[in-house]
Amino acid sequence: MAESKRNRTESVWDYPRPPAVERSGARVRVVFGGRTIADTTRALRVLETSHPPTYYIPRTDIDERVLEPTGGSTFCEFKGRASYFDVVVGERRARRAAWIYPDATDAYRELAGALAFYPGLMDACYVDDEQVQAQAGDFYGGWITSNLKGPFKGAPGTAGW
Image 1 (cartoon, rainbow, N blue to C red):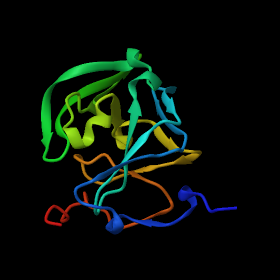
Image 2 (image 1 turned 60 degrees about the vertical axis):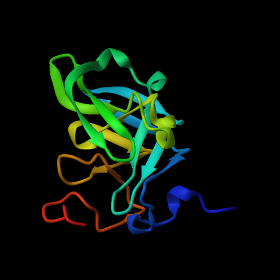
Image 3 (image 1 turned 135 degrees about the vertical axis):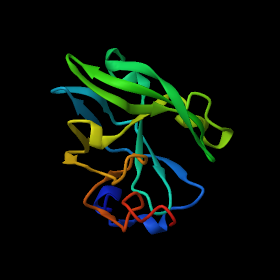
């Protein structure tokens, strides 16, 4: 039986630049406020040199009642302009905790209908049944799993990589 992709060690230094987009195939879940707010087997992974993957979840697999659009945007030289959402469950609010590229560039068009979540702002995020660690820093949204090898961009002192 072939070894699954999730069981193989991946070095983030083997990821390309510009980033690649691939179907994950794993079960990806996001938990906030004691609730599973996203659950999918149709996530996309964005893979970029020195970064842990960022997972994008189709909007149809997210409880959109927890999303509140928020002002401001950022610009990615590859993907285009990102819009942000607060995630709200009951009295809990995670500000600017999710983002989307509503008008993604042609090369990243498949991301246009999906949201990414900052795992460090959620209660927990999972790839299959493994709880991920958040990428260091407050800008990148990478999900670190046990099969990834770094070092990872995002921590203090890594901005010039």
